[in-house]
Every structure is written in C-alpha cells, then in structure tokens.
Length: 137
Image 1 (cartoon, rainbow, N blue to C red):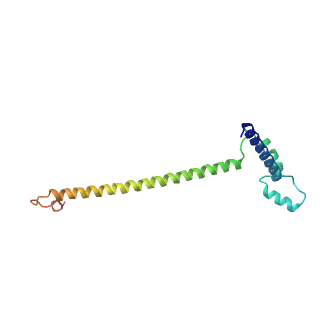
Image 2 (tube, rainbow, N blue to C red):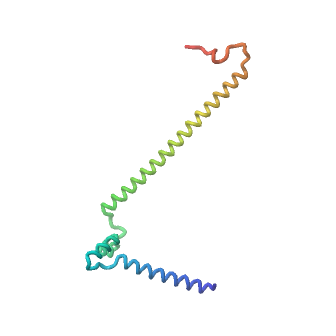
Image 3 (cartoon, rainbow, N blue to C red):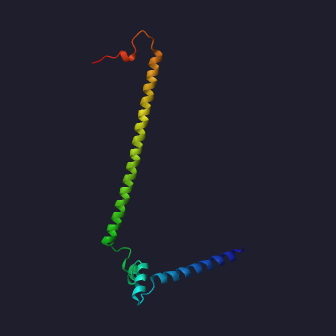
C-alpha cells in the first residue's frame, strides 16, 4: 500500500474511535432525568455527581492542598505497602537463615565424618582409639 493510503486509513480509524468514545462518555455522565427509577440507575453508573464532575478540575488545582480523606487514603496505601515490603523481606531473611543453618549443619556433618575416617585410617592399634583416650574432668 501507498504511505498516503496508510496515513489516511489510520487517521480515519482514529477519528472514528474518538467519536465513538466521545458518545460513550456523554452517555455515561449524561444529563439527569426526571424519572426517579432511571435516575437511580444512572447514578449507580456514575462515579460522582454531574455537577461535581464538571467542577472537579476547576476546584482542584495543582498547588491546592489535599483533603483529609485523600491524605488518609494515601497514608493507608503507604502503610500497606510498607507492611507488604516488611513481610516480604522478613520472609526472605528467614529463608536465607534456614538455608545457612542447613548448610552449616551439613558442612559440620561432612567435616565430622572426614575426621572420623582419617582417625580410623591412621589408627595403628598401639594406642587406644580416640574415643577411649579422652580425659574426663
């Protein structure tokens, strides 16, 4: 295909997508209806009221202070993340400590077996074996 045709088709697809999304946004927020039943159903679909939604970005600028609820929510999120991080690192530390303890135990066992084998190989029978040659205090 020609590059002009590809560019035209991509622009057309973008335009169609934007018009469909714009219609769905206006349908989701919509205007308030006089019927009580339909109004309740539309309020369940809307996250915030239409009047609040239209003034949301006007009221809250970049430099304005956060509300108490927003600060509490951010604090709860940070505390939850800290707790998860703490639990993760504690679990990793416990696993590492268990691994090191098992390795140390296995190494001590291997060393003890090697020493015992060396003593058995080098025992000449003239002296009592190591186990019977210890002094008892």
